[in-house]
Image 1 (cartoon, rainbow, N blue to C red):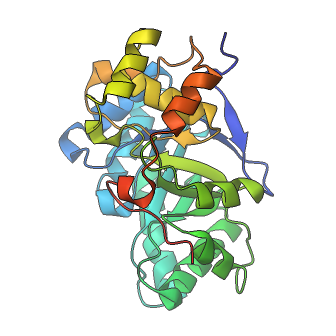
Image 2 (image 1 turned 30 degrees about the horizontal axis):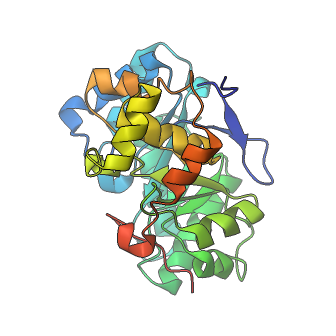
Length: 283
């Protein structure tokens, strides 16, 4: 039987911080429902919520934590900066604005702050990373990392970063897009790999292989996909605004996917062609 639990964490490299192994995503969660969705997730046992400046719901995530009755230290909150502001100081201030929305007050902080995308180019990547390093130095972010970064982008940070490796790389991951070059590099360097779109936005709900495995284990297709990520030692970030599905997506700790069936899911990989959002560039 499974040895994993919903309370499991992974260590971040060169850090005393632990990241919960199951996260809750809020991409495209409207402000009108985001707080309630987060409350449903926290009630179901999630202790990790992933937002971003681009999602425009950072404040609602913070509101949910305050309304939950949990202490701030019990909930791991991630956010992301998408675009540089024009200087390290301006980008730093932009990040502080996010911290203030999520955890207002002199002692406010986020647990993890990411660069959302490498697409802005080398100079702006450097500006944003140095802004995050300042946030980290001042304790306003307990850890820092990247999202959608390939091997070359992560290597680039070595040239100027005080913090290396980044604590986390969050990329699209599911059986049809496994990004093996990047995940193997991250695992080699101790970088925690987070899996966004682990449910493939339900596009594969009728895939014959996935459906047959769900029937075999008497689980939903979503539960199979989340469990697969957990057994890969990734941090999946399933998203839903449906309270029943939120709860069901956390109910993945009473079964193990066999080695053979893990191999079957591994065999679905379509490489970059399997991405529904963005495959990383590794060179």
